[in-house]
Length: 628
Ligand SMILES: Cc1ncc(C[n+]2csc(CCOP(=O)(O)OP(=O)(O)O)c2C)c(N)n1
Image (cartoon, rainbow, N blue to C red; front, top):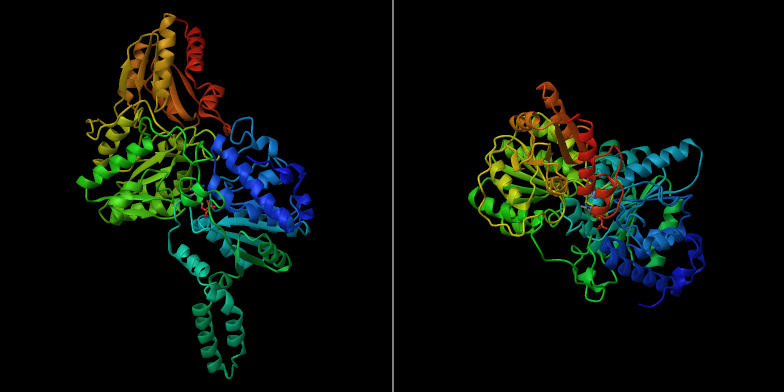
C-alpha cells in the first residue's frame, strides 16, 4: 500500500480548498485506498462509499460544513465524509465498538447532522432543517444527498411533495448509480436511466425550452389550447420535468467523478431560489475492480482480501438466510399460490434463486416496506399466499400496514424477519430488537422464532398451512445446525419444546437464546444447580400449558429473548404466570430500554448480560431470592 500524504496533512474540510486539480485527484485515490484497506479488515459498505468519493470532496469544497448541513441518506456512503472531517483515527476501527460507526452519528462529529440508517429520510430532514433555518433567520445551506435507490421509498416522495410546495431553499443531490443494493427497479428507476443514458435531453433542453417559450399566445381559448400543447411537448421532450412539475428545479446530469463539473453545479445551486435537484451520475464501487465488477456483493461486505477481492470466512454451515431461500424454492414447487416479496433486499433475504426460478412470482418493490406489506395483503385477498421477507429493523416501517392491512383482516401472509436480534457492526439503526414487541401486540398474528436452521425450515412449511398471518424471526448468519436437509419435520405450531430436564430453575428461551440457555444450564449443573431448558418456539401464542407445567415444577422461571424486554416474550410469560396464579418467580432476560451500539455481536451479548456466563450468574442471584 502506498502512503496517503495529502490525507495525512488535512486538518479539516477547509483545507480542501487549498488543493489544486491534480492534488484533488490524488486525494480521491488516497481516500479510496484507505476505504478499501479498512473495509477489507473491518467489513462495511464499500461500494456505496467508493462511488461518492469525488462527490464528497466537491461537497466539502463548495459548502462550509458544519455551518452548512450535509445530510446523507441511509448514511452508508459516508466513509469519505468521515475521513475528511477529522475521523481518520476512529476510522481505523470502523464499526468496532471502540471505533467509528459505519453511519453518520451526531455524537461522533459536528459534521454529522443526524443519525441515519433507514432509507429515504434525507429530504424530510433537510426540509425540516431549512424551515428551522428560515424561522431563526439564519442563512446556511441545507443539502440532502439521496441515492436513486433511496428515492424509491415513499417517504422521499412525501418530502419532495412538500418541498415543491413550500419552496424553501434546499439542495437535493441525487446520487444516481443505477443501483439500489442490487440493480434498482421500478418505473422511477427506468425514468432516471432515460435521463442518464440520453444526453440528447441535456443538450436539447435549453433549445427546446427557448423554442416553446417563444410560441406566441393569442386569445383566451387558443391560449388554453396552446398552453396545454406546450406542456405536453415539454414533458415529451424534456423528461426531467417530472421534478420541475413538482416545483423542484433540475440540474444535470453531471459526471459524478469529475470534481470540477460537480463543483460547478453545486456552486450554481448555492445561488438558486427554492428547492433544486442536482442529478449526479456515479459508479458504484468506482476505483476498486472487484467492487466495480460485483457492486451487489460489495454493497455491504464482511472482511475480504484486498488483493483478490475474495470474501473471507465464507463457507461453513448454511445461514438462516440461505435455508430460507432454499425452502422458498421447495415450497414454490408444491404450492403454486406462493409468491415472494422483497423491499430491495433480494440478496440479503436469500431470494435470489427464487427470483431466478420463479420470476413471475417474485416482486422487488424497491425500498418500500409499507407498500410491500400492503401488496401482500392485496395478493392474499386475491387468493395467493405471499411471503414478505424483510429485515426485522426495516419492517418497523410497516407496523401500521401489518395491523390495518393484514392482521385486522386475518389474511394469510407469511412474514420472514431476517437479521432479528443483535446484528453487530451496523449498530442501533440495524439491530432487530423490537419485532417481538411490535408483532406480539397485533391480534391474529402468530409469532415464531426458530432455535436453529432446521427449525426455520419446519416453521416455514407449517406456516404455509395457517389461514392467518404469521411472522418468523431469525438472526443474521448461521445457527447451530451444521447441515439442513430439504425434508421438513412435522411441527405443531404453538408448542414449546423441552430440551433439558431440571427442577431448580426453568430457562424458557426464544431463538438464538436457546443455545445460550443450554450453555448456562451446563455451567450451573457443574455447581449442582439443575436447570430445565425449554425452546419456546412460539412467542405468540405462548405455550401456556408448558409455562403452567414448568412454573409449578420449578421455583424460578427465567425467560430469555433477544428483544427489548418492554412488551416482549418475558412480559407475556410474566403476565400469564400472574393470571394463572403460578407459585414460581419469573425473571426476564432481554435487551434493555436503550439503543444498543455497534460492535461485535458476542461483545454486545456480554455487555448486556445475554451471554451464558451472565445468564448463569443471573440465575444464581435469582435463586438466592426464591427462598429455596
Ligand atoms: C427502510 C430501509 N429499507 C432497506 C434498507 C437497506 N438498504 C440500505 S442501502 C440500500 C440501497 C440504497 O440504494 P441507494 O440509495 O441508491 O444508495 P447506493 O447504495 O446505491 O449508494 C438499501 C435497500 C434501508 N437502509 N432502509
